Image (cartoon, rainbow, N blue to C red; front, side, top):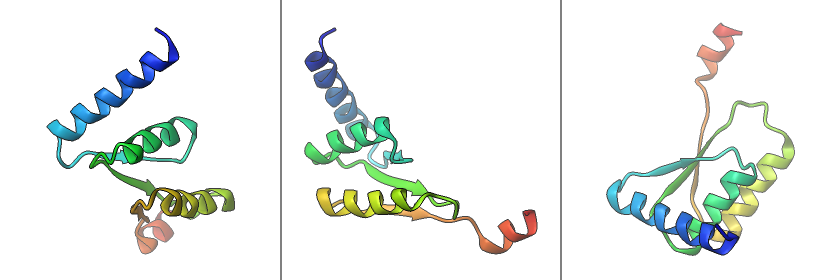
Length: 91
């Protein structure tokens, strides 16, 4: 399948997901694959939330990218953090 057709297919799939599952969300690590999905969802104004997990050990570049994605797409990205006390007890 040509790249253009794959992109159209992926966009259609994300649109179906957004329609069928109103609470759909993308768990993003801000890797290349996640950025493709985020770009398509944002460009087509699909109601798919984006969230990430902050383990407290992410590289500075990831934090900078989160801010850039928020600004570039005017996208709210929810960041979840582990419970600090539970984490400390575990470590």
